[in-house]
Image (cartoon, rainbow, N blue to C red; front, side, top):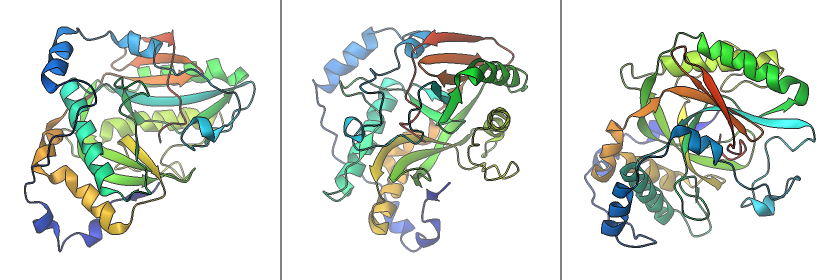
Length: 305
């Protein structure tokens, strides 16, 4: 894990950089703010199962072809008979939250050099809002024989964890250098609202890592079983190849403290359950002893850390 926040080099300029700034409104690609808001207000929220059912993208190739994915390479190359697997907490930002996240990413894009392209996780190629997530596993690859036993063991472990539904909140921006690829991710750190740390996420991560280890799969945020990183949990909102220069990186991270983005500090990211995506099937495991449901559809586990 490599979280880059440059905390040791910001003290001399923090006061100057924390002054309130009111950036110009981000241009809308389609329609006016009024018309967009009216449409959003008229549409009822979709049921949670709908997102699971229609979350997957169309598979364009069974081989690793970076040209189809903005130059990305799979962390786990496709192996016939193996099932790409990911365990995560899903978050669907509301319309106002999505709009502010888009504005934040737009500000970051403006700060980066012309040769540095920032790709975001906020919208699909067709402009539709996408769900975000907090990872509880690395991208895994399960043999067919392990697919069902893994899910059964994971579901049982999460149901008996004693963890009730909870919420976390964004606590800052950071750059995350992927240990498995050349990509650097722009992330929102998250922390529990009541504790300022992440005891509930840590409890879930420990169980997910234990199940992964039983099936000889790699752990997340742990080199050894006892080395969990409480502060590593995050939501990825964008990615780029390499890492921006230090001065630009620092300017980006300070955006979170600007007046325009202070509303993010009070956001509540609800965690009612955990999702396991195996192949194109998503299973939702409710916390608090609730059951799980499985539906076709899912996200590509290679997309985010």
